[in-house]
View 1 (cartoon, rainbow, N blue to C red):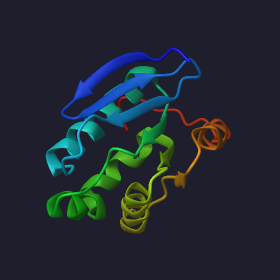
View 2 (cartoon, rainbow, N blue to C red):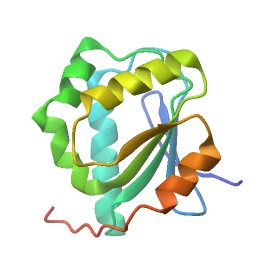
View 3 (cartoon, helix red, strand yellow):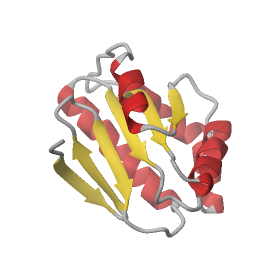
View 4 (cartoon, rainbow, N blue to C red):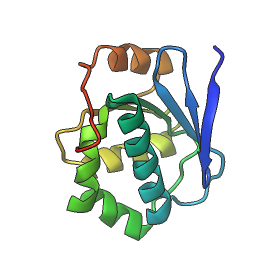
Length: 141
């Protein structure tokens, strides 16, 4: 499948799939910092506002090894909740045990209305994402 590279923020590269799903992958096994997560959330917000529709995110977690202590606190905190309006669904694909452990940890931290689910298969994750209801976004969200 041909992916269109749309951005690189820190260690994370963002691609747009032909089906409209935004695919992300990390190019480094360094711990994710709070700054990297905030930049990612702001990018997602901007893209959703431009498209006037909440995004479907397919996150390749196989390269993710750790979250910094500050990043864990940020994900768990109320500040990150404002970004829920900009995502219709987020699928974490984790095929290796370490990535699955980190993914499960993030799912445990993120108690929100946003739909987030972990998968071991990209095909299953894409199917689930495409079943998510569309959600309109405007610049006043």
